[in-house]
Image 1 (cartoon, helix red, strand yellow):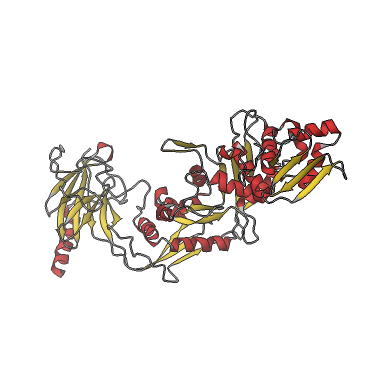
Image 2: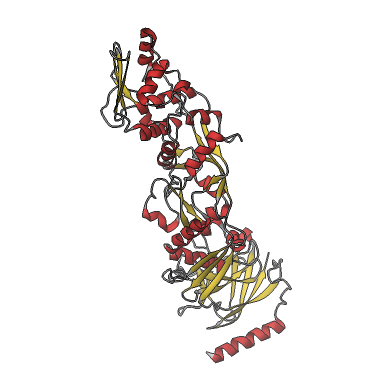
Length: 539
């Protein structure tokens, strides 16, 4: 082993004297006809702590962090703290910034006195009876429901829950954790999983994930129109303790003829150990009360004509009734309003009112949300939620979509709780964390650079292996002539489906790089410790 090391060292020294001269900038791109010698030796990376800053994390390709789960964002009230959706609805009522539409404010603040109930299927007969007999149907209805006729008819908590379990849950990408955690199934209603990429991005990637989506012929119009929140601080520092030395191969960036590194197959497994209490530390000046700077949800209206729909069938066959609103698309204001009203009014009653007092001709009986109507010419009744959903929808008529928007919304977690949640989530996916650590350790020092081939000193080799699997770039990679007519790819692919070719000292290999550029690799020296190769750009 010592003799081999001395032999290779002597070869390197000789090449330094007689071979191509290295440029001042080792990452300067090659020009046609230029050659450069690179020494490939497996990197010597020990175990122990590694520190990564915000800039390093943001410089990684988005896909490197997209599969890493950062925890779940609470959408509903929890432990005395308002959830994000409840905070949004509170902001809609007070909004003066134009984020919420007029339709959104009318829909959310629905009041008995706002609706022309005489034109509704659910309560039109009651209003007609009041007109004929001389009583105010809206006032009698307010007494039956025990509400002020000028007060909102559904609580924000119920609307928030309907948004979470209906609108957001209907999106195919809203309720599953990213990466390997997707196999755990849907998350609990009222929680929104975040990836590390989405957390670092500040909302844009999350808004894109929850935007329009089509898969297998099914279409979802999306639920989030805009989303922005402050990303972690610029002084973010993540320290990860490696349980063992990372297994890395020496690699080449052909365009720059520069030394790069790639992880060995399976290198992420066992690289970190969450059982170690100090395996990961997250530091930085996180905001004590993180906030969402902007959130806009859009609920389109059911496009079906208002007349002719079964708003209130007038029977109580099931606890929820048979209104066709239950069959509306879950992202519509019709479906969300019906769900919210049901959540808020399903247990309402018992309560009974009548007109006139003492010897009523008309009586309203409220029990378990069913509003029974008794009197001349009156139908059996309707569920309260059916009546409210119809009233809200008729109030909106065929107007624009319901837009709920606001800013400065509490995230639902303190800064310390958010940081603790991130650490806990990372601990449940050690192999995914290991893969990100390897991506950070092998990230090239200049933008746009990437490893193209690596040297594998396996016992059945050594091999020169293409980094890209054959499935992603079909066709030969390695050739025995400059015209690229004599393919040298080994019939057996390397792990991961990567083409490879056996190498020997004095051998020459030709490669076709990006944009049709040809490269010549001459193996100047080779032993068990590594190789010296001269990379020449031909085109």
